[in-house]
Amino acid sequence: MMDTLMEVVERVRILVVDDEEIVRDLLYDTLSKTGYKVKTATNGQDAIAQIENEPFEIVITDLKMPGMGGIELLQRVQKINSDICVLIITAYSTVESAVSAMKLGAYDYICKPFELEEMKVIIEKAVERQRLLHESRMVKHYKHLSITDGLTKVYNHRYFHEFLDRELQRARRNSSTFTLLFADVDNFKQYNDVNGHLAGDEVLRELATIFLDTTRKTDFVARYGGEEFAVLLPDTVMGGSLRVALHIMQAIRTKKWLYADALPCKTITMSTGVVSYPKDALLKEELISKADEAMYHAKKTGKNKICYFDMNKIVDYKEEGTGSINVDKE
Amino acid sequence: MNALMEVKKKTVRILVVDDEEIIREMLFDTLSQAGYTVKTAKDGSDAIAQIGNESFDIVITDIKMPDIGGMELLIRVLRTNPNVCVLLMTAYGTIKSAINAIKLGAHDYICKPFELSEMKNIVEKAANQKGLL
Image (cartoon, rainbow over all chains, first blue to last red; front, side, top):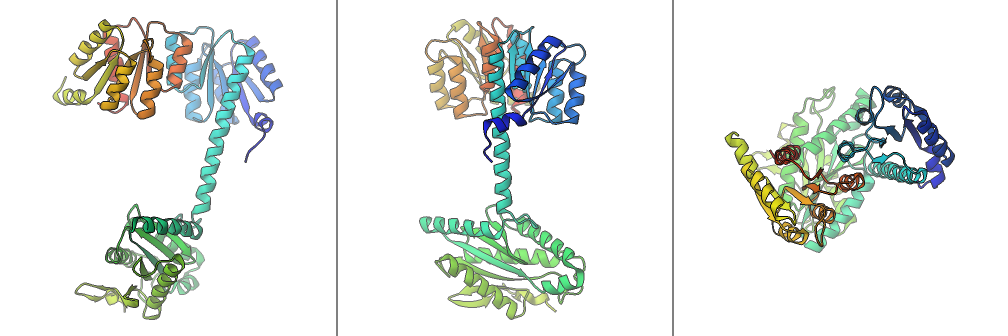
């Protein structure tokens, strides 16, 4: 990602806008010799036409021109692409016009006559700013790609592990508690076989949205694998997590799903396993395997339910007073 | 001025910094009468001490002052709270210093002498832009 200065310079496109030919030519020659790709425009309208047609990183414009002046050009350029650095040059400078140009977002304001060397330094600084801007965007972009699941846009498996490591350390340090929830879509293969994988993908996307909507901002939702989601709930004890799990499962069951008639419950359901730190396990591997175990137990014993560890034994979560939560299961 | 605007203006806290007493007093009177909550500081150090003790929404400061000048005050104010709106005033306005001030984050740069009504307008506009009114 780090380019040499010359490579950066060669990629920078500069548009010089001035109604005076001599200024245009002077800047064109100087900046071209330095290695920049330079074009010129004789007035504001001409400049806008060129900027709309091809990308520029830097625009150097005179302030006073017949027709559209430098300030109007600055405002129009910012509407087209606010990343473009606009430098204003002028022979009629006043403090007021300098302040108003800078407040409108000009990168710099240079009085004529200027030294060409000074101009080169200002351009170098502008180029450096553009490079940093570009770089920080790329870093953000790649960081985003590396931690999110492409299909569902929740966090991915890799980042889930990183986050779990961090949460574990935090909980150890603060002697706090957290819970981990694994949920797997029931009969997903059957759904895919009947409706096709595209429909299946859509289900996963909508499930991710439900998970995000039904958990708190501080909870962490990831797609753990194929049709399996994981949720980490910091500073939460088992009772609270079970209520959250129930809330998620109810939201999923009651949603109107397309083509879910082929499924046993006529809707999408999930089997869920919940474990808590430090009650059920102290190590990361043990936490994950126990959450898995509870989830598989839910699958094996009828699906569409929540199972958790109670004194080292896996039990079903029952809603108070109503018996098992899978009452509406046919 | 309606009652709501009166209340809102009262919540806008302004610090006026100038080593010239007459300017401090003129601005204090004008802006207080306009309804703002105004305090004054006689130089940069005084201003920094006050800013450490209470928060201000708008700081209006002279540039040329003994010890800490307006430019340094601008930098120090924004370092502790980037939301503060800093207005610089100077009798020695140059294009270079004006450009520098805006690049450093000043909200405006006003040349002395100015009309008090003009300053009132600038403050009202700034308060509006910052969502204070």
